[in-house]
Image (cartoon, rainbow, N blue to C red; front, side, top):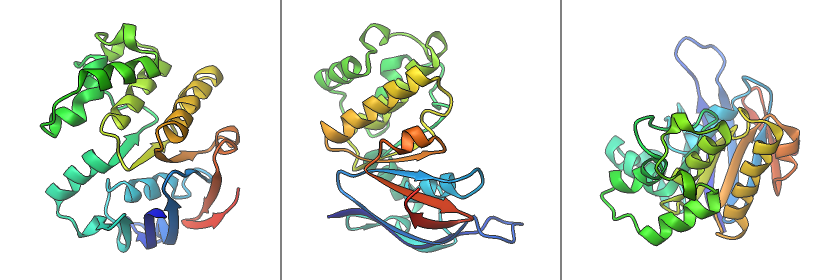
Length: 221
């Protein structure tokens, strides 16, 4: 069953003649692990942001289950992102004044929901961060910070996890650890995962690879 569908997505930025996305359509099944690859400037990150409700398309539609994402107003869209989409960025986007545990649980705090201690402890153990729960981001390595970002994306058990170059700022060992965590979320916890990457080794670990070039999407790398 398709969990996420995009139909004829177009995104044109002000002052740009050529659209960043030009009629992109795709369908992602529940439980899939999909990689989207393409050269710099091809529209990969733009597509991910539109799929996750971070930016609005010039035209076209995104639907998650039965929700028309861009039929929501800004307040509804913010709630939708927090509850249904787990976003992971290359540069972590952690709040420097919050501890590891506080950064991970921030989406639940913003939603006014109770943080279940067992859920948090289990997640910290899976991420290998149990001993770092009270550390600040500045006291962590890059790999550890990315693990915190993954924990934050997973804490609300979202419908879909979208990762934008999650290994792009890491060495090979840390990159593989991050991919192992994403595979664990996909296989053991049933999360649907979409990864944007320029790394063929990362893409090769996905069930399906989509290629984007000049704002257009094709199947296969």
